[in-house]
Image (cartoon, rainbow, N blue to C red; front, side, top):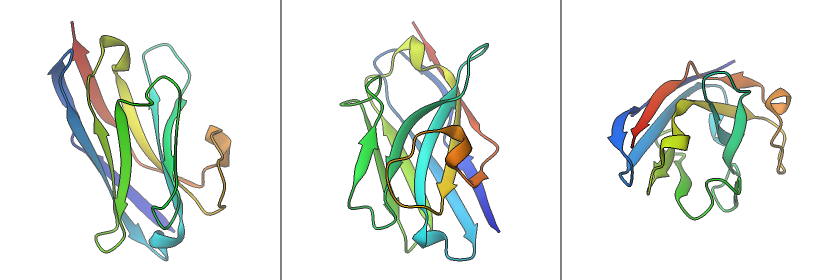
Length: 124
């Protein structure tokens, strides 16, 4: 079993930055690929970024590429999402997720564990 707890959300003006954190606990958390998803009001949950278990490979949705950076510190069992140049359309609840299968899976149904989410609101 793996538990994920997100933090770092908040209200920011367009053009600003935020860093989200996801603290993982449980068995073998450093062996999981990790990802960030987001869900805006009235919309489906969508993939944002993914990082391999080693941190050596990352993958981004086109909508965030060049603005967001995913990273991890396995010694601290924590995954981060640095979000720069934020736009109002980035407003959503952001979720951390863990996948025991390596690769570049972006479907919600591929992930085994989820956090409770953290709200990010970007004002114009």
